[in-house]
Image 1 (cartoon, rainbow, N blue to C red):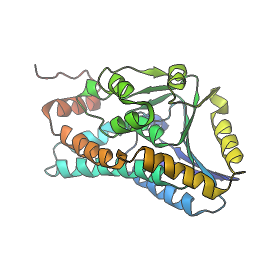
Image 2 (image 1 turned 90 degrees about the horizontal axis):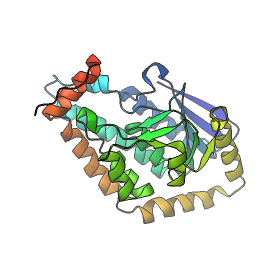
Image 3 (image 1 turned 135 degrees about the vertical axis):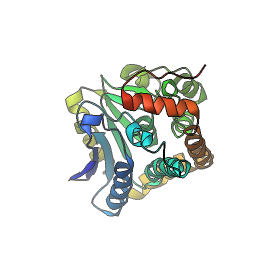
Image 4 (image 1 turned 90 degrees about the vertical axis):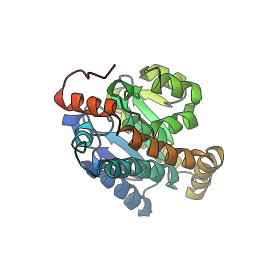
Length: 258
């Protein structure tokens, strides 16, 4: 699911499902939230890095797990719980008093992109790509939309969520989504160096700065995330979402009703 490592002032949460492109299932999200809480309590930890094992950061939620819920009579409640689970991780990152850095290589899609957008800072490799990639499967990736609007604006949110575009690492940097671009083998090193640099600052100063940015500039974000979670769960009850999930599980193109 995940690994947690501590190196000096840096705590690293590593998504560790490389055989599934680090898709996040329920157990992974629960473990991430617990790891964030645990690292927050460690006084020696001055910053947290979130990264992935293998060539990719994360392809998003585990769609096979979502598909397995289709025939459950309590499916809507489960999908609502799933959306709340993802929202809980996002809010934990936003509210954490320590800076959180996303160290991204390969794909950061849908819920994976939401995790990146929740982080305060982003270091990426030149091969990183950022996209929503949910609409072709008949799914609404709700949580990512308000985060996109908060970080980079409504125009880019529309471009990714509706237009379906995929951003290269270079374009993502030019738009402010990525802050530093490095070679793949230097991604974590650059993030670690950034934490060490920030460690020279008083912890209280960084905490208040993050609070100012996330609470005052994004004062509507919490409400928007709640609405987005409900919308994402409801969207999974549609016929097109059911077909999209089944098609993904069967490794075939979806056949949506006309």
